[in-house]
Structures are given as structure tokens and as C-alpha cells.
Image (tube, rainbow, N blue to C red; front, side, top):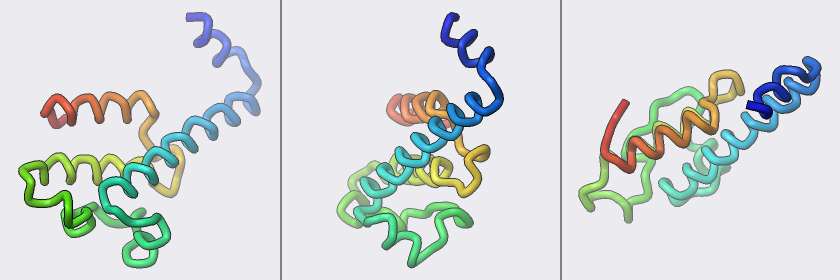
Length: 111
């Protein structure tokens, strides 16, 4: 509860700075997740397709991960990663939402 009070009692500049830091962490997580699932560096992905404007498909995934009975999971992680690297920070999920999504994916639920 104290943390919430601290966040709401700050100046607009402090809150904006905290928001930027949090959305930056979401973006970085998305980049790492994309690298894990695709096996490619970020510059390789953005040169072939614009990640901000397309929905991911299994063609984006690392070929070594496909066909092992987890293609649906891979697609869900690709979708999450693309949400995390949205161009506008306010369109990205929070890290709590990312956590919940990863947890749901790992438990076999799709929300």
C-alpha cells in the first residue's frame, strides 16, 4: 500500500519518468522474447518485416522449435512479444500483464 501512495504522490514529471522506465522494461522483455522464439537478432527481424504492424505467424519462429507439439505456445509467445514491442509505449502491456500472460500460457490457458 505504501508503494501505491508513493507513486500517486509524485509530481507529473516523476510519474512520467517511472512510466517510461516500466514501459522500457516491457519493451526490452519483448525484444528478448522475440530473440528466443525466432532465433534472430532484432535488426534481422525489423529488416524483413515490420514488427509494429503485423501479427506474428509461425513463419517467424525458429525452425528448430516447430513441429514438436508446442506450435500454439510458440505463437502465443510471439503474440506477447509483439505486444511488448509496440511503437507507442502506452499500447504496451504492463509487466504485471506480461507476467499474467506468461503464467496463463504456461498453464495452458488462453485469455
